[in-house]
Length: 163
Image 1 (spheres, rainbow, N blue to C red):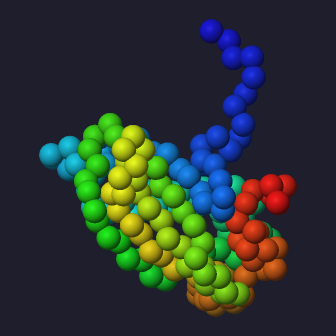
Image 2 (image 1 turned 90 degrees about the horizontal axis):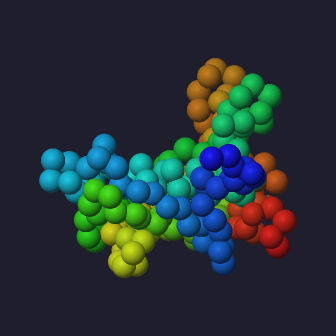
């Protein structure tokens, strides 16, 4: 079978609706414990993947920023808090939603919800604070002010061109 068209390049990054990013993940065997339930630390991995995809949809490419000449501004997690509600099992499809709740020149606070995509039940809530950082002359990672274009994209919270 031959495909006649290519899927959009951002199909793996989810979508944004009403300033909320939505990211689907199917729970794989590697995500679970012996009982077939998602291992608790993997909810943080799901949230990290969703945040990275959200930034990518906003036009913030951290993989480019960390390269020499790429501007040197990326995000690091300063604080994360997780509230477990219900377990997810092997094969379940979960939707991780991400929304910016506070923004400054250096920090971004987000609320993320891991939901069962079929029932809509919240499985876990993640409250995260990320800090814009760069590498200084001594090779140390230090907080830094966000470039204006990065801050503008986070303020709008929609894909470029969706305003």
